[in-house]
Image (cartoon, rainbow, N blue to C red; front, side):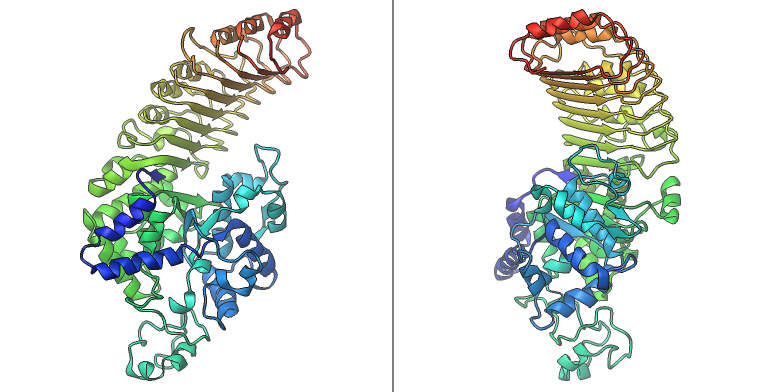
Length: 594
């Protein structure tokens, strides 16, 4: 989810608004943030790190904290620096400036879940694509990319595009100097007189020499953690960094451990207020969390119950949230609604009030992943009319409902989509919804009159009998420029159902409709309306393996499309075709690639 009004100017605004602090401190905060923003790392570097360290130090069950102790701190101990300045990272490009993403994650989570979430974010993949290898584009690497706890880093480094691999993140494990932040500390004893008399000795010791307890992050560097006011202090920088990046990526593991941490909660709140937040879940939901989701129970505990490895951090973060408009209760609600919205549960979205409501109203880009809900039979269980009323600024929507094998209808969802009247780009994925029969509610999408880009995937929905309601909605989108729709392997579909109107959709330039393997499709008479798309430049129609398709007379209408520059027609494995002479008209169109 992305909010309006983010960017570098906002970061300066944050500093200027902290009027309670002296101006000298404000300038210091901005300066320290600028230095921190020079310590980014790329997906390429993260994959190289995993490839080199997995054999000895990264197993399927290894947590982020364990990797920090065994690798990050050990390899930087002599220099007491952040990991991006280590010898290993210098050999792989070193620290990178200008991160565009901030990684929010739980140190108790398995490191592989965090790496997978970052990968999904950079590549724009769906978690099922990563695990199954069913990629929609042929240029993506061959499966499997992740299997039994092992990520195929070599294949990813070889096949991913440079623009993906070079995505830069601010990832505290690598970007923050852990030697001056957390390592060697004992929260209960670090203010003891004995500790203060010999700090290096106590910092190196594990267990603690005073309380005899094992330390959370032991280290042998002996460097004291920076305190507020020190030039190396970094614990207060996350707000400024979040305002300087494009988005916060929340790395979710199957148990949603990140939602139990007050640090992650504070980072989510800041992202909702000032930039954007995307929740990335790479693996299947844990059964306990799944039961909560089915019962519509809160996924995030009240903020005052969330944990932190160090008590002072928890107090500092809660104190900061309490000072915000509406206080802690307001943000208890906001975080739960934001996570639920990302997972496709919007029934309680109307409960957000105050500053939280303003944050919801600023969201510009919305990603919803419902693929966890394999039990779902109707979207009415998750959506009710009015749920999206407050999403006033959303201009881009990506909704993933693939492989919901019990889903029958889209009640509730269609009505909610119709409320997002600011939308200009929509992508809906219903691939593999084996029982889906009723898409009548999607006719409400006709209210989305500002849409310029539309992508719909209904492939492998074998019980879908009628798609005409969808087209009755599409024909109202007069600003639409590109439209790509797939009904591949909709084996119960008998009619094309395309219903457009003359004089409308004059802005449409590219149209791609896929009927591949629609084995019962025989009626394409409604395609005559394509002749009204006078300004169309690109047309793609795929009828491969439509074995009952016969009369093509209706396609004679394509002769009217004088502005076509590219047309692709696929009639492979269509044994009953007739009236082929009507396609001769296409040859008379000039400047055409056939």
